[in-house]
Length: 214
Image (cartoon, rainbow, N blue to C red; front, side):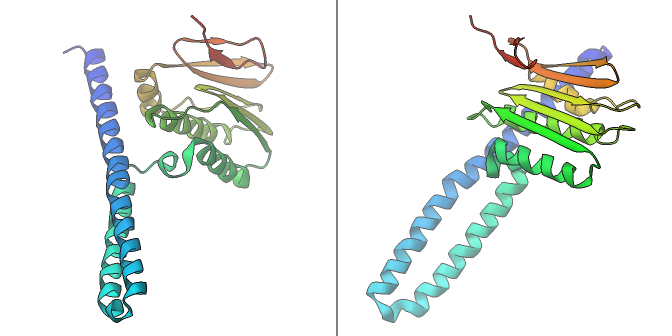
């Protein structure tokens, strides 16, 4: 089997496995937790109407609480991305905040029209942003990083005088498998990373890609 095809098959298998695992985690949480919460509420109402059952109902409520905690833990292991718990916007703010704490310069960030619904692409957007930031904050002489996320389009600019390590091979491979393209350019010492999904075109405003209209 040619090496390129072998690598493509591996990336496809990894991407599909991640998707199945993530779906399983979210499905587990969404289907199991609500009935357990409803049962706990009914038991609490029963205890109010029948105080003599307090001892027995408390034991059951404790068991339900422990069961829900176990379900949440397992769901988190299956679907570990913070996007699943907090949404893409909050996850992006957390990642940027973590890097601001250790970066001596400034990190400017903005995002609009973030994708919702299918968690696969938002999770990839977060992983790409985190990977690019991790590499950019280490650039020699870097003072300012500008990050913009518009839908599924990402643009990151970092000034400085040294090179910036390229995106990790696994992150780039998974993103490209999902239809994203990477571009790196340099102008007057500023390195610009542009990541967009195939089918998006460049807007004339602020260099951000927007969905093409057909």
